[in-house]
Length: 261
Ligand code: PGA
Image (cartoon, rainbow, N blue to C red; front, side, top):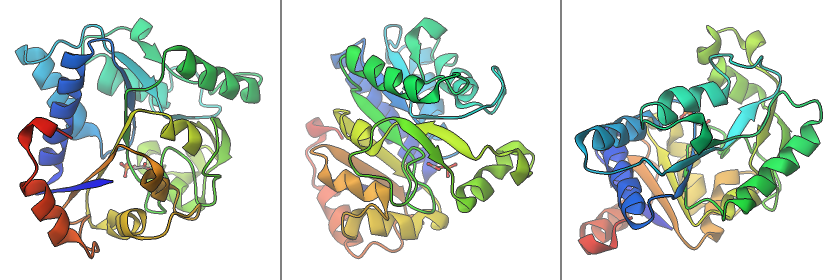
């Protein structure tokens, strides 16, 4: 696992957007797995700017979703489909045909989960999966004690996650769905490159447990330790509890530029 400590969220966004641009240059039709929440927004802003300036051509990029609420009406502005279309797909100049996501309104949710895993496999797999991290260490919506081998399935959100996400629902926790579809941890680990961005002091404890704690279902993000190409990008505040922070800084400072992330 590589840990990169950046000064702030904007620097993290720029660094990761550059890695995505490099990927799209090598593989123009790369499948990019995107995350929702507040943290990845600087990545999307920086990437869209690169597309607008002509620094990268994203016309053939494909985008796929990490997770989704169950039961929000189609077109609800806070469904993750709507969020990804608004924050990623449209700013990159792509259309819905470039986009893949699970159906949170399916009559048969179990079948929809299996179909999404199969669809991801049929595309040839995710090239780069962006991840945020919950204050409880979740990735996607894999809450603590999710199986590290799990596939896409329905999950029940913890009270803490519903509190954390109430800000997207006019601070009304009663409007935050209880159930979600999420790529499983095993599904996430199938991606070729995992890039987790964490910013702010509120994530410092979860980041330390992820990077320096034991691999444990109690901290789902710690499964990144099992992946051969996992990058954790953190700002100074989110790095505050890392015992090896100085080592991570020195290692990245000495890294050959050509290696990228
Ligand atoms: P956030 O969400 O980026 O809005 O903090 C992260 C997550 O829950 O994965």
